[in-house]
Each structure stands twice: as structure tokens, then as C-alpha cells.
Length: 246
Image 1 (cartoon, one colour):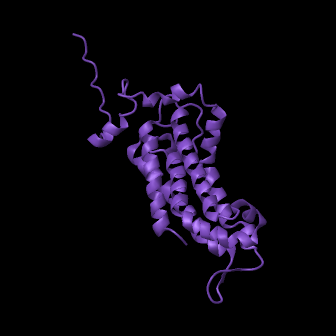
Image 2 (cartoon, one colour; image 1 turned 90 degrees about the vertical axis):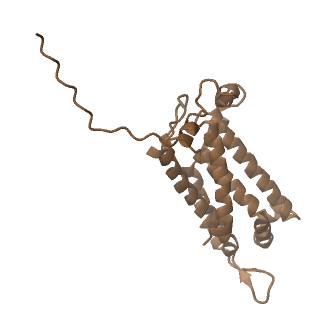
Image 3 (tube, rainbow, N blue to C red; image 1 turned 30 degrees about the vertical axis):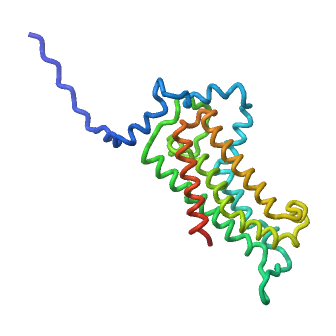
């Protein structure tokens, strides 16, 4: 009689519990082989028509490692803090420096970017959705960047665009007050600061839409990643406008 094989050792590691049904449906929504619409394959359809270097420029422009230091430098820029004379504003004996005028707007931008970074990292750790298999040549800054849902680039650009949109009136007032201190601002805004800010807001939304779309075309994200990130970014813009400032 042949000796019986030794019993297989039981694994001591237990598999992680499956996500709730709603999360499981969301995670498997885009990669399905035959979706109702070919949205997951936009990266294939659009590649022949969009130059790759432009998509990479959009990616870099919304990268936190580039965008946050740039935004922080605006808050501490010497051209804003070293103006020799204060600006007179309407009211008896009232004067403000340029940095005092712009600090509330810039502080909302800085604090909102930090809020976006925290929320995106938390949600990615919660969902742990893998990036598309066709995602190639991506530089990962931290381990959480291996996860796909939601898109941090989409949330960041939509947050900035939404904050500028909501702050348009305050930006126009700030430019009007800063106009006497800078020939550049005087030439840029012309006679109507409101129109200048409207152009700035339009450029911001165009950048937000283009960057969000580029995340799909580059293969970095699924469609639902980008949609969720964009919605989160607009919500963060509202929160920052109402509650976040130094």
C-alpha cells in the first residue's frame, strides 16, 4: 500500500473581505469586455488625433508636485509682499497691502489643495481600484498612486476652476485695487476687470476639461475615475470658498 500524501498545510493568511455590492459594481463598471458605450476605449480612439506631448503637458500642469509649490509661491511672492506703499480702499483711513487683499483668495487655494490631497488619498485607499492595464510609463510618487479611483488630476483642476468661478467677483475687486500698483495689471485688465476675470475663468474651465479628458486618453484612468474626481473637485471648490481661509 502506497503511503498517503502528507496533508496540505493550511494558509495562515485570510483573503481580504470583498467590497460591498455597490463598490464592487463601480470597480467593475469600466473594464467590462462589452460595455454599452465604448467610453473605456477613448484612449484608443483619440490617440491618432491628439499629440502625446500636449497630453503630457496637461498631466504635468495638474501634478500636485508642480502645482502646489507654484501656488504656495504666489502666497509668498516678493512682488506681493514688498510693495512700498499700502493701497487706499474706500473708507475713512483704510489701507491694505496687496498681500492683504490677495491672502484670503490664495489661502483658499492652498488649503483646498491640501484638502483635495487628503480626500483623494483616503478614497483611493478605501476603493483600491487598480489602474487600467493599458496604463504605460507612469511615474508614481507615492504608493497610493497605484490606485485609480478617483482621479486626483481631475479633482485638482476642477477644484481650481470652481474656486476661480466662485471667487470671480472678489478677484475683480482685488484686481481693481491692485491696478495702480502694477503697470502689467493695468495693461492686462484694461478698463474692465470683470471681463478680464471672465476670460481667466473660461481659461481655467477649458484647462480643467482638457486635463480631465487627457487622463482617459493617456490611459491613466477609467471614465468613472475622472467623473468622480471632477465632482469631488467642484465640491471642494465650494467648501474652500465658503469655509477655508487664513
